[in-house]
Length: 110
Image (tube, rainbow, N blue to C red):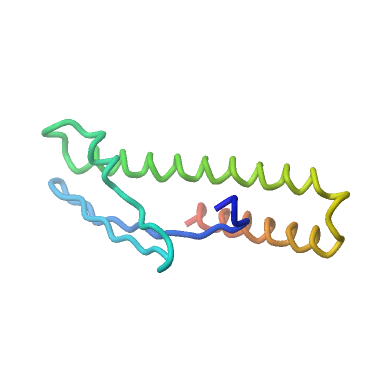
């Protein structure tokens, strides 16, 4: 949420068999849940659950790329205002960005 200078995480678990894909999604209460519909719509009629899982994982990867782009934007904003903002505000924002990036790294390692 770049406009609010915050990152929130959603958890998406899947159960996959040859015929079925079930998603379990966890989202913070005030946020919009992840919608797997685009992954379903990317499949053609008759394609199996494995291909839908592929599209689902592809969508999740795309969201991570958008997140990285947004973080680059936040770093650019910090650089643009380093002379305008107070030292405390700059340090706080830098610390927050560092925590967010470490959390993203941990999520990707799982």
